Length: 276
Image 1 (cartoon, one colour):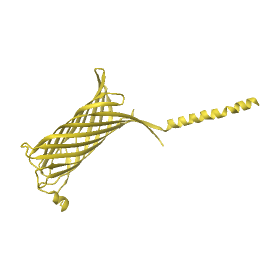
Image 2 (cartoon, helix red, strand yellow):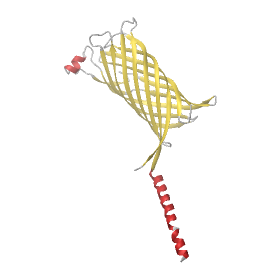
Image 3 (cartoon, helix red, strand yellow):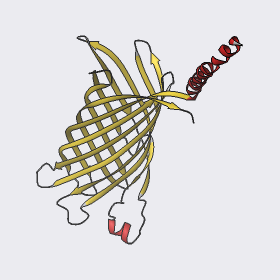
Image 4 (cartoon, one colour):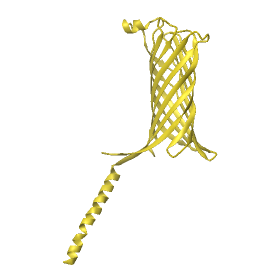
């Protein structure tokens, strides 16, 4: 009889251990994956060159500011990465005689998917494509008739990112280069001699949404940066951002060349996702 009660007294503890084991196994089974998210915030300053023959035949040169935010998501052991970039620019430029001034502002978003390749020498190559949208303006302070030009475009862009970590003076660094080339897209432009009053008040469409290619809009955007590993979770990043947009459509020429010296911080997050 004593053996019977002793044996049955052990059941609650056994059931508790079994329950804890089942809960642990269930939690392990629910785990989907670990994702690494990298967040970058950078501010840049540098020269800008502007030409828009709808507003003026003159070229304008000045200085501008750029804010750049980058979010990159990837899974350890997986070859696909996703990169989302937000870029905001504002510039003020003068003509050669310093008698007229133009202000330029733009917001651009870049969403890209990349296939990752690990190369010899600890090089990392990400190759893929980017969907890009731009909206902005150019305002000429001297024009009384048609003083402003609206800007809008969407593009499909082949893109590549190559990264190389290295050590220097006992510190960890990483060099990164990104290249984006618009392949094809669509942009807004008034036609030669057409006013915005005709477009928006009278509704006179005159080829104002123009398909673009590398020939009609040969643009380029690239970044060269160096990261210094300041801690396990964040880096200091410095580098150069060049964004050269140009087009010749509807008998009008335009370009905006931005050169920026960038500085900012890189923050890394590791997140565990669960199935529900």
